[in-house]
Each structure stands twice: as structure tokens, then as C-alpha cells.
Image (cartoon, rainbow, N blue to C red; front, side, top):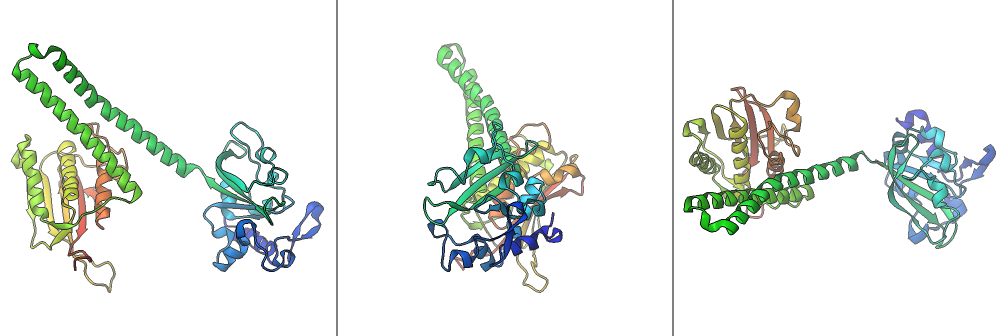
Length: 412
């Protein structure tokens, strides 16, 4: 809710203006102890921290501008600030919380059902405490919220002059934890099969080497080699995901002939058993010079072509063409190269297109970790490019990515 329309924003501003009064117990007015007049000019919080409202005001901010919930109680335990985010997280109207006792305006319990403010006793507990680290607590109804608190004192071990509480929803953290759990489960599942095969074949060869013919030994060793490559690819994918998520994906730019790279990948697929007639390469030139990481561009092309072969049908068309782009209406034209990979299969359902580049998305049940397209998007964006998915003219899926061209600034 917008507290500006409810009057809470104005009330909060009035409450913290120097010389204003706040509602005290029994409805009597009391002087705000946080004003500059009562603290004395130059007074500071513990560890040299200034009044948070003064700091916000100096930046042109209001508590309602903060993305996290902010609740502030004075030295008597009454709420003097309850911003819009806190109202949204708790479901309490800010104007109803102002002036209330903290334990009533923000009734928190720990995961064992104990009342949090009675348990921690911020005003009467140890005088050496400076706050509470972030932890999961429960609001009425069992709604989880992340809470941290700071005890503001005039001097070390002095009485608490103000209690500042930060609130955050748990949805984002839960999504992250769920994503990590899914990643671990997927990795465990994908590793189990090849490692079981490697263990089984090596144990069999070691125990009964003399009983097998050379052809049988070769077949088993080729299977072990293939499964070892599968494990290596999975580990490489995990490292790529880690680098993408942390923003540490390194791009080593050098001149790349993308048309030659496409032909090389198609040749590798035909050598692996695909018919040459299934692929159609279109190069519309002349192409501008492309500076990119050749290994990572190979990774993108290999993933998109494998995806088209495995999940698509009919002819797989790869088109390479210049794609001039004007970022602004009156700005200069930026040269780019576009690579499009399309097939003639059933395509991707319209409702699934928004999830194609997310982790674990699979277009069919034909195997795979569901991580490839997520990595592809990360690599393309690390180059400063873009990638999109749509429906091809032949009815199948169409992936198109563009890369900026030209010599890097450090070589220009």
C-alpha cells in the first residue's frame, strides 16, 4: 500500500521533525528524544553513527523509499517509524502501528513458538549487546520473515535509546535455496549413471580381463571413455554456472570466423552419424570482423545445434548475417553479427518461451540436464550480445543471438 495516501508518511515525517511531539503512553504527548535539540548538537549514536533519519534526509530519501521493511522504536518501546515496506511485509497498516508498543505492532515469534521480544528483551537485557543478527521469525499466521535489529545507545553499555529493526520477505531466499537444491539433485542424478557404468566396466575388466576378446574390451573401454567425457562436460557446466551467477565469466576476445565455426560444427555432427542433407548453412556477407572468445562461441554453437538435432525435426538451418543496430533514434549505427539456428519440428509452446533460458528447462524428455540454454544465455550476455527464441518459418524453434563486432577498446 502507498502510505503517502494513508497519511502515515506525513505522520512519520512530523514525528521525526525537530521539536515535534510523539504520542506517549495514555495519549499524552512527549518530546522526541531523537531530536537534535534534546540530544545536543553533535551527539552521535554508538560507534559514531548519526541519526538514520538525518542520514536519509541528507540523501533526499524517506523511510518509504527503502526496499526493506524498517521499524524503529524509541527508548520506551513505542513505534516511531513503520515504513511502507514493513506494512507490505507484515500486513499491518503503518498508521495503525505508529505509537503502538513494539511487541504489539510487530508480534514476532521464533520457530519454536516463543515470543521474540520477551525472549531477547532488548531494553532490559545485556547492556553490551549491539543488536540481533538476521534470522527467520514468524508473524501471526505462520508467515516467515527475515529480521535483524540494532540497538542504538548513547554510549557503550548505556540504555537503548532507539531500536532499529529491518524486515525482509523470505520468498527470494526460498527461490534461491530451491534452485540450489534442484541443482544438487540434478547433478547427483546425472553423475550417478555414468559413474555406475564406469565403475561396473572397470571392475569387470579388472576381475575377468582374460575372459574377454579384444573387441569386447575395446567396446567396454570406449563406453568408459564416453561416460568419463559426460562427467567432464557436467563439471564444466557447473563451473560455467558458478561463474555466470557470480559475474566472473571471463571472455578472452580474439578474431573469430563464425561462418567457419558453423561449418566445423556441422561437419562434426555429420561425422557422428547425421546426414549432411539435414543441415543448411546460409552466410550473408560481407560479415564485419568479430572479436569474441572462440571457445565460448563454439560452446554456444555446439549447444544450439545439438539442441536442434536432438529436439527438432527436418532441416536445421543456420544463418549468419550482419545485423546493424541503432541503440538510439539519433545515435550511431552499431555493427553486430547475428547467428540464427532453426529447425522444422514442433517448436516450443508459446507459454514455455519465457522459461527457455532458465535453469532446468527441458523442451522434451529426451535427456539433458536442462542447463545448456541457461549457460548459452550467460555466455552471449557476457559478450555484450543478446539471444532470443521464437517460432521459425518452418514451424520449429528458432534461436537467434547477436554479438557486437569490432576491435576491443583496449586494442583500438
